[in-house]
Amino acid sequence: MSNDIIKLTDIDKRFGTQTVLDNVSFSVSQGEIVGLIGPSGAGKSTIIKIALGMEVSDEGVATVFGVKMPDREVLGRMGYMAQSDALYEQLTAKENLQFFAEMKGIKKDVLSEEIERVAKIVDLTADLDKYVVGYSGGMKRRLSLAIAFLGNPKLLILDEPTVGIDPALRRQIWTELQAMRDQGHTILVTTHVMDEAELVDRVALLLGGRLIANDSPKALESAYQVTSIEDVFLKAEGEL
Ligand SMILES: Nc1ncnc2c1ncn2[C@@H]1O[C@H](COP(=O)(O)OP(=O)(O)OP(=O)(O)O)[C@@H](O)[C@H]1O
Image 1 (cartoon, helix red, strand yellow):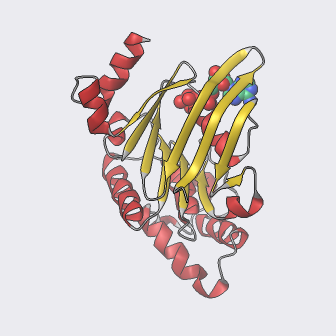
Image 2: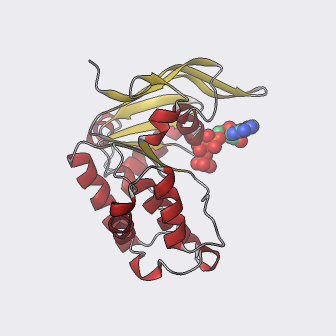
């Protein structure tokens, strides 16, 4: 059996006359962190939405855990963090976590413990009783991330999870993502932060609607004869 957790095959996506994805095939295997990078508007969020079944491709097939998307049961098995926060601003952070935990079917007897666990990862323990309307942008991002972590899902799909988060906490979050990976979890993450792209197992570089590179950071740096993913990105962009 294949160990592809996410598998996109021959995906084309158009919005009106604009081709956003052009014959993109892409997979994420069990136990790896894949970083999806590319300039703004390259189609990263669209790939994620197609994997989740939130957008329908014009051509091609998207499966997650071997099941064609969208599928309610599969969605319940993953943690997803969208690019814009979908939070209840008039509730406290703890109430938001309680609500999403119940939606995920987390049992009442472990609820408090689970909320404490995810809040700690994103350093929100002291702010759990505050109303989200008073949260800063970075705090809202952290709360969204904590929601994605609820239930310790086997698959995490994170669209720009660290925007607005300060460097020390970003590092802490990446350490956690790598620990999850080491326990066999699978993570697909988009990022604009190039030093984060150095921390993934595989970088998928999207340019002009096509997947133009898909390899480990070290292999890409060597293929492009540069010393950082940022330079891979710049060189690839210049070559297009
Ligand atoms: N629902 C939609 N209707 C029309 N055009 C869309 C829609 N969604 C995305 N697009 C267009 O598709 C292209 C890719 O968008 P997408 O959000 O996937 O890019 P991205 O790589 O995630 O960008 P960013 O890094 O800025 O988040 C953009 O040109 C965007 O304007």
